Image 1: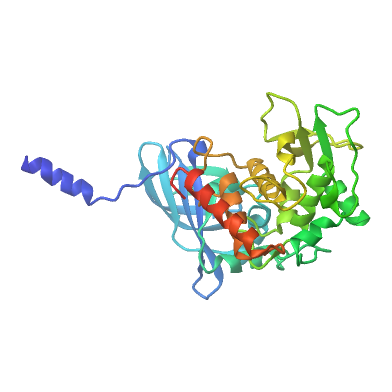
Image 2: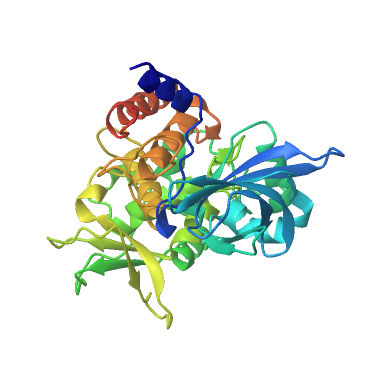
Length: 372
């Protein structure tokens, strides 16, 4: 009995290390820090799949070019935890980090080599890379991504009053831009669907066309003014949507639940990714509304939800595991919270901001397996 207790005490004193048990389970964590001379830098921790790796010293390489010493710890029979012993300088990795950090696209090349010349390489996608949210992350983003293009877009103007903004039709030049960025298709195809039409005030329209509802929602997004960047991208919300999809499909059929598909826009020759909006989601009217019941507030959040699904699925059934995962529900929660707090300005009233705050709390309570 004493021997058993001694073994248990000994085991409890040894920290347990968990790492990937398959190539798909790998993950990379990057922590902003400062180098020895005060330069912006990143510490790397890689939960690697590497049955052949030997524990001890080694090297870790990011972006195929920058290598620093590393420590390799075994975790089970196939996993290894690889930690950089010296931070990577951000200025040496700008080109490699930009697609991932600024656009949420591409991959980041990671490689580890042990003292016995065993090597493991991995192309880390955005969904498997975590950035530690500390006081230096914004400085890293600014260094890698350049000027604060996340605040607004060219031609964007702050919305002073959302009701007045939505009462006006999209100006012809802006409508042309919206149509070029996000053409709208219908599934099944409509032979005699009502075309786009708009008269002012828009609230007097008894049955606004699907196109008008969608383009008014996108128009609001285009004119959002941010005082801080979105936590998952350094792009303005409108530009982030453009980086994820190039068309919208309105679905009126049954038995079709895809969030996104590939389509060829009218007049185009190349296929693009399109998010799929169910026709019923456009029936909430053309006013701002309440995100808990409908209106453009609900539609705007839904558009971002669908855009997030392009490269990040729910990881806990129909829910997200946590807010930190920043999946589709996390994106909705974050946008609703930022709009309610005014860090994203959209000319909302205190009542409208309150409804967004209530919706965010509703999401927090129901859409995350960890309870947020």
